[in-house]
Length: 280
Image (cartoon, rainbow, N blue to C red; front, top):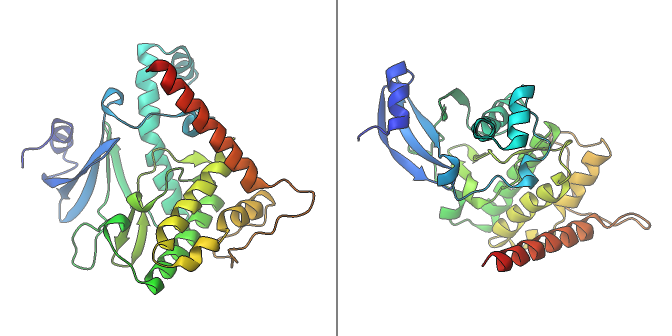
């Protein structure tokens, strides 16, 4: 196929040899299968801000740090240069998260390089060596659903122990590789310790897993892994591979974390709807 303009630069640099095909077109990026020497990899080409349907919501960008003070000032002022730097920071957020999580042993694609808005990384493959499908495209038995849910809850814990929350985790951004689920799409990942929305985002990620796998294993619908995980993390007791119960008992006199988070989310949705009506 004809190489997209953004990938031609990588071919010229010798970072990739050829483009095999486009794998998917998403809300913030297009992904291509490429050849790099003897290896087949994935190349994620980030879309420019005005071409993306996904917006950099304050929930995700809150407390993201920019080391260069000049860049930070420009971003705060909203200048053309600042918007350019904000875009670069948005793209590099996924790269940083992938390296951080891969080092922590989380099941994410291994990053290889990042150049001119293109992320080169491992191509997650199925048993036949083809690009792995998303969970959303597959049916599961009760036993399979329980197994994959257990694996992914463990990955959520491992991510949180590494200080990262996915922020948009669902069946649409988890691939089923030959050796199990792999988590992808992390440009909206947030710092668990530095973002006020972190508890709600963790709960939403875990609830998404519960709702999806609960279609195949209804017993999961009664579980409360989100509050259990966050309470262990907040108290400094959460460690990777620790046994979890899926139960959470509200302590007398303690804040009902789940209830508070639901109220916050309801208020946010109401405000968003109000603003949309005003702009219509």
